Length: 300
Image (cartoon, rainbow, N blue to C red; front, side, top):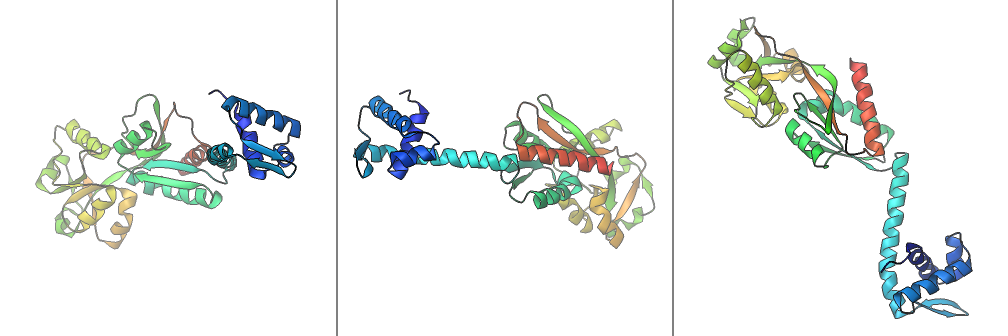
């Protein structure tokens, strides 16, 4: 059936208040308009929905059955309208972000802290992913923004914006104290156990390409699932590991690990924001995107 939604809206208010005049007032309409809508709805459905008397309006059995469905639908619509209204001024809503470990700690966390303080009604959903997983979640629409590290390997319609550059260093624990103060070549790492992120990560790809440029094969002895696992593994003397310098800063100061100088420089990497140009962002995600870009400008 192709029945005017306005008829159902009128029926909702008539059934709710059991009074045509009150229903008209709630809808900012007139009683004759409401009466005409009810007559049209009954004619379209082929049954009586209302029983009218001097005491007001009562629902027929058919009206009661219809109201049980119309009530749910109308309340859902009202909740949706309220949610959108709250989202317009960020009193409510949800923002979804896929983030890699390095991006989370290197930029995203302080921005999210300030965002939550300013917009406590907005719910934040963070998915902790590797870069490929975060990009895949963005492509499938599971998240609105991806904050990850290079290389991302994204293609249209995904778009990458570099936010913050950072450097990684090679660190070692007490077992390898003989390397302190020495400069070694990448080729010499074959003589030591090496810790690296897993093969499914872009970090593995980054170091695989670095080694290949020098005619070497990357062959880690230990593969970690996330960046925050590498420091404990190095501190436990399981091998040498590459880590963003800021991740290792505390352990370096405490003397738990030391930096190993490399003859070949490690290229700079970047924390970047990836968005899908084919998917419009919600108001909350737009605001978070602006804040991420502003935070990046302050750091540069």
